Image 1 (spheres, rainbow, N blue to C red):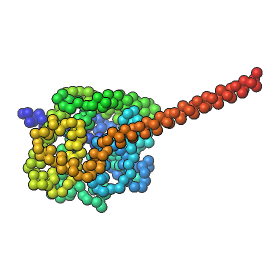
Image 2: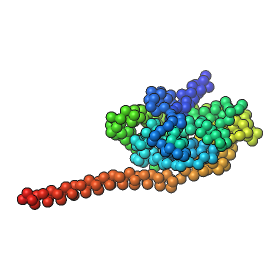
Image 3: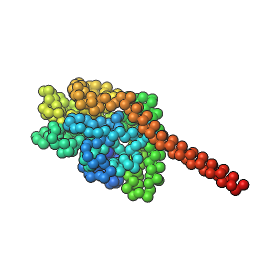
Image 4: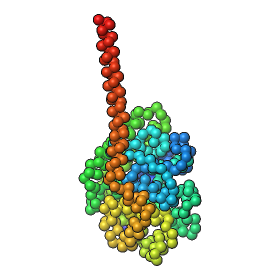
Length: 359
């Protein structure tokens, strides 16, 4: 009976939704209702760069890491466009970005003017977009296993485990705890402002309205200790399944998760384990599974993971981007203030000149 309850929990918290992340079923329903937020796949977009491969991303974003990693694994040359999604900057809500990605999230992949959103969606179509390089989603007798274990990794609710706190689990650093509380409130307020500002634009209005509903539900989940504890319990069940595959499958003989070759299943688990380790969950979730720790160390040795994931987690890289974007945004405001002051000054001068003639 306990096993049945746990399986139901995994089904609830482990369904992959349109946000490129594992989300509770409540969020799945919201995304389905907001059809404008459905993921895009290779869709022509006049607002996208029309030549080359472009990735809109934020360095510390888990899903940006996912998109960067698949491009690195495929050996694709691409141009990065940084979208600052924190600290009151919130580039993801600016109309020019929303016209690329109606979901107001990172990453967004543009290939010769065609847009694909949702990190998992990008990974699943990478072989199709870039057929000239190594295949990471094989079309052979391992295909079903690869998809199964890719989906299993995707079913870990990484966002909740990153930003939420559970009893007996790792605590958020005090700086992050304060930032996250203000971050969600500021996001909510900015979305309300954007919704009001663009109420006469049907497309932007639908995007902001859908995103606001989803953000409201996300805040509710992160503020619920019971839901977060349920997510941790579900993740423990998922880890048990991963361990079973590692000790019984090809990995036990020196292979990878589903065969002799590295696939998107290994890649996705690498990302997930790295994020959980950084967040401090390794002791709680896999200390009793040596096979998972060995798998994690094997994945960490890959140069692609170091290049696309680890090197982007530095405070210097993240802080530098945030500072530059804040300066850029504030400089626009400053220019408006200066321009307004100049106009007021000109007006006062004209007024004085006119007054002389009147007198």
